[in-house]
Amino acid sequence: MHPLHNKTPLVFSKEMSRLTGKAVWIKMEVQQPSGSFKLRGIGHACQVYHQKGVKSLICASGGNAGLAVAYAGRQLGLAVTVVVPQTTSPEAIAAIKQEKAIVKVYGKDYQEAHDYAMSCVTPQQPYVHSYDHPLLWKGHASLIDELKTAPFIPDLIVLSVGGGGLLCGVVEGLMRNGWNQTPVLAVETQGAHALALALQVQKIKALPHINSIATSLGARQIAQKAFDYSQQHPIFSHVVSDLTAVNACLRFYDEHQLVVEPACGAALAAVFQQHPILQGKSNVVVIACGGVGSSLEQLQQWQLSLPIE
Ligand SMILES: *Cc1c(COP(=O)(O)O)cnc(C)c1O
Image 1 (tube, protein in one colour):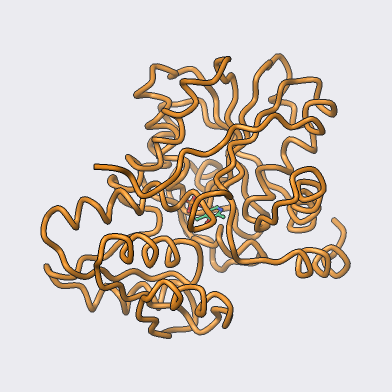
Image 2 (image 1 turned 45 degrees about the horizontal axis):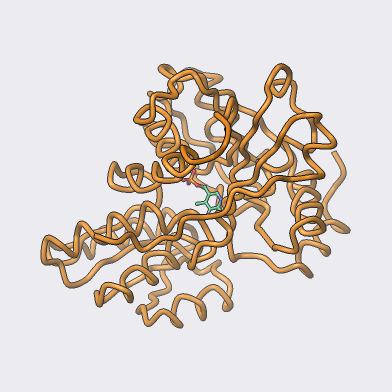
């Protein structure tokens, strides 16, 4: 079946390459129809449910996952309900409604919205998780398959981590393409550093709360599979401040004229900072995971108002 996501361009970053002395390539997930990589995995999951005869889906997310489920559901002719927490912006709700999904506002945070959505699940209306499901990872892995046609072999992948769905998909993709040695630099913002915490204590542990503007990284704990992969694959964790992530978004905008969320800026920032892992690498792929949750004006406002480290 034809996937719902696009093959995305791999764009050479002149600025990042000049800065680091490496060939740095950007995988433009920001150009997916739903604005983020999420459509890869979520689109795949929705297609599988559709093939099984399911007629409606439910998910919880006021962000890019909700939008991806709404988009995929509409494409497939499925009824979609998106449960969003009370903190969700009117713009995000409008974007989800534009894809003809039903929006239910419930709970003070993602966890409460998630719990409510789970209570609505029936065999006819399955739940689409935003990061913790094998169907999602399988779909996300297509991103790595696309790198096979590039004129080089990547020797480092840089990405952002929220709950670790993208990370699991990328590692699955590396493994299924025989790139088991290719390291992954997994970047989070301070205050949403659930992977860093898990690696520090060597088990899954929940952050007491999320304290970062990078709301798309706001899973309090990572998926078990992400932790398991960290024990099997070279995964390096890195944490940046909110301001560093925002500055990276603005630098990215200057070069590419594309607006991405701070969640995405986190990964970009690691390259701008010239993270030591770049040493000895030649071809670096940074995943610009995208996100529709911020505007240029908001990025500029954050740049002025966020505390300097
Ligand atoms: C969902 C999302 C992330 C985090 O992805 P996980 O799979 O939860 O790790 C990062 N950036 C953007 C823009 C997202 O939408």
